[in-house]
Length: 284
Image (cartoon, rainbow, N blue to C red; front, side, top):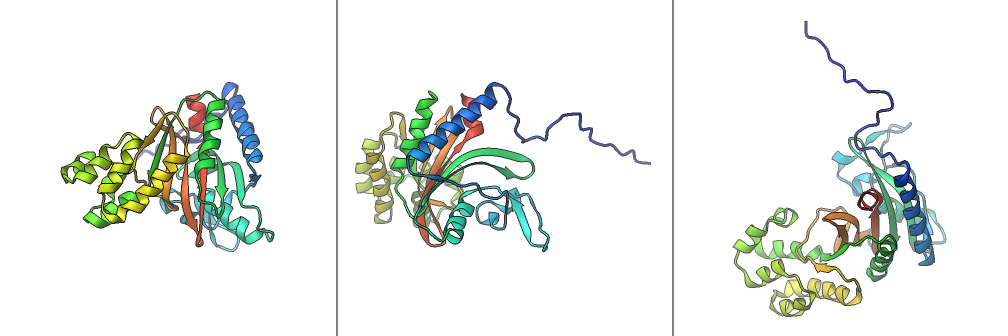
């Protein structure tokens, strides 16, 4: 007879991927959230807390990452795995006086199989400018003496290159630099090796016409942003459900601390960002 083995769960053990804060980490988490709440409120954002359960998470997150079950009417629902689409749709559909378009939230998201991630996020509904969002995040990081690198990208650029050269987008998603350089195309090599924002204007003059406008939008964002450790990553691509144009990330030691960009939901162009609280706490 085959002997059955059971996984032992010890007393007070917590699931892998879940979060526990105590002592200094709990205090730091509260300080970060309180400061973020203050600075966002001063910048004209109202707070919103969305339900833990949602019918629309498949629009934000790959279905394989959702924790799903059925409600009392046997409709499939899932634990909140992302906040952006729910916030935008709730504000537009459920608030009759839709004048206020800047909202922030401080709440966790949950991913399959047992990942719990705390975030501070903000949405600018109907507004696409990113300079103010970047400035808010820069001030927050400065307040906690967190030395980060700011990366600026435009997700349109690798998409357009794939259309022009008949390439698979995975080359950019996996950042296979050797494959990109092996094509031996001058303007593409320049984009791949671009480091200094001052080089961008010369590159724009070289690239095919389909790439000029996306690169000019990136150039314009660079001119609006004031941050010491600034990097351009024009070929950066991440397979996201809604961020689709200008995009930015703050990193500490190659760990993403915050990110945001432009997106379109229900035909309206907007922008938003998120602070990954757990990653920031670990770095601080």
